[in-house]
Length: 292
Image (cartoon, rainbow, N blue to C red; front, side, top):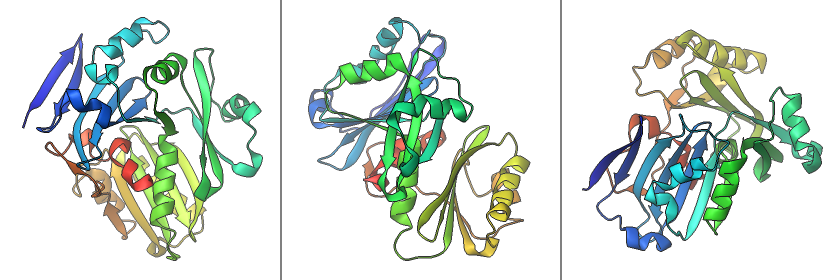
């Protein structure tokens, strides 16, 4: 197993390669790129072996996103300078909202984001994804330089928001006739995303601030109460920045609700390296197979 760690500038940049990863075979690989506010993660999939063969992370902190030098910084990682069979970009930026399809107007996407409290600058581009199973559209913004860099860098490119993949996964998993309510909670360091599916339909998708375990539990209990659900009838799936069942958030949550399970990594694909670091365990990068 060839495992490699590299550093770029004053920030740490991680790169992990499996034993079967071959740079010269990149044209036969699929590349998944995850864009967050000020960082980029990636995973390389060998579709023939059905195996992830490499993954990595590089922060954009310390670089001015308004200048072309940022592109040079990204290209220092050779993964982004190669040709791939297919490239999927997953955008996980906070400037997003969900709009019922019947109310969606492509000419007013920027106005929608402004209406819900997001300031959109000239350095950002506003895009949208349709979630067919939910009859809804995700409207979101990301740095303009990054969008056009990726569009010009890769020919076979698909761009999706993380909310699109997460909601899609929930609806695919829970539209098989099961009438129970399902609540997915994706936990970040100071926030949490929640997706509620009830009667096989999307009822809620939102982000809450969650700086403490008390906030985490309050948000869930309050959501159940406000939506008129009985906690015994709600299945709660927790993933993200929670490392184990012994995590303080999980221990506290079990005092108020009982039907809880930790999210597991998708089993459809295999991984040609040790399981990803904890911050990647439930990353959207590795949840994409559940949305296809």
